[in-house]
Length: 309
Image 1: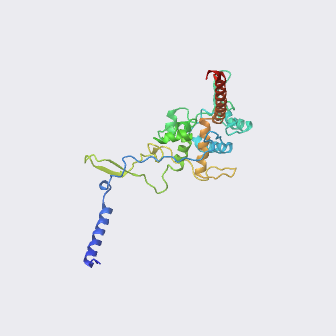
Image 2: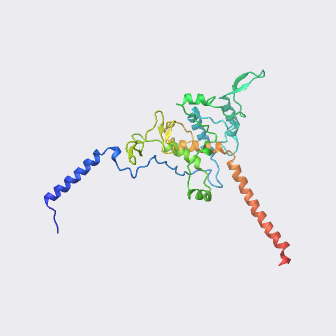
Image 3: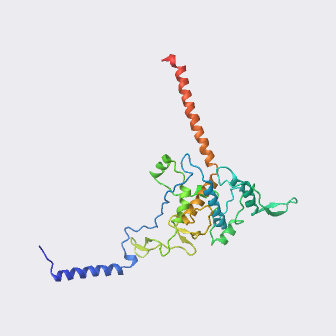
């Protein structure tokens, strides 16, 4: 059996040490960039389990009430809910607050109106009123939020969502997956922000001094913005808005960021489609009607054309 000499062993160890030192000393711009993307990868939101998913799904009133509590105590500082009326909170299929609770809630808001003489006044809200805007206009919103305009949350769960691509969207149609918005909202807050000590990923950009070469560097987050793995542009004006234990629950539900975001995402899904449960029920009735109608048409055809065959 071949046994290496001590001189050969020492030579091999010296080469290994030299390689390690060279690797450590290699500058970022000289690192292998073949596997480093030009833009940070976008994190695809993982699918969550929702009570309102599927053809027979429906909203959980207790979860919607918790979600509204999170919205009111956290989100409403910047985000409006202008397309939702106070009275909607007491309707069947939603949070199902009592009429007394809705009336008391509405009275805590000041609504711009006009008196009998046509003069502008502020009055306590009524159940028929809609949630007022947080900021009177976009300029005021930008001035208060580092140049960004917080979106209205009324339709946020309908407007946001990750693209499944092909063939993912085909499976979404077959499985009736329509919860892209709530999944996106949950992932954006729960998984999107960097953990303590975590840094933005490396990206490879063109070297202006060496055509065809790449410079490997850390993704640069503009001042005043925050890196987010789920947000497509990765630079988000909103810092992580909530932490464990920030909102107090009285029904025994976990007071964690994961639970908070699930609850507020479910509430926003209801706000964007408050007639979801009723629509599903009507669709089920229509399917039964069409099945019965098809049977009657088949039976009628057999009777009418029985003597023609």
